[in-house]
Image (cartoon, rainbow, N blue to C red; front, side):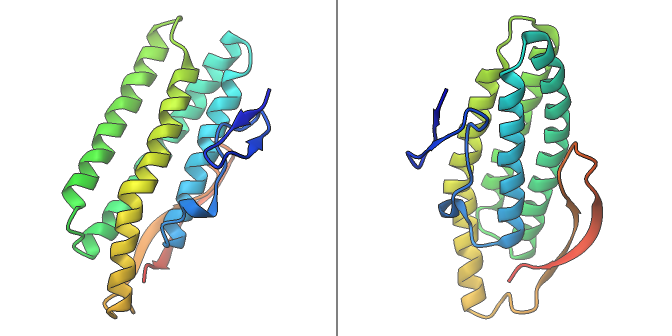
Length: 180
């Protein structure tokens, strides 16, 4: 089976989406987190390709880690937006909250309903992430680039907890990142 991705390029059946440089928002920290979200989406997709019982068990395990990572990622974005007084902060934060609510609802439904198809959720996740990156996060990135060009971000750093490879024994450490 071959899956078509947004770029039109075919990829193996192990991925529902692949990172493209055009997804970059111009903030290396956020781009690396977006890559991890795409990786988690592909892990969820692969779990759906197994037997129904295996798929549900693995899916629930991965989604729990994904929920934690999404919270971490949204927190990072929101810290950046607060620091720079991003004008669309309220709208962006609401998008995050609405998405978390949908994810939690899907996890609850999957836990209770044996007929729930987790593949539907994977496609929702993929579409939401790519749309959110393309619209909201790109707008935030452009705002930061303007601030950087104006000299506002020259010395601004952000202390965040860095999480790598959720669910695979990854580490988390405090790091400082230059956001400008």
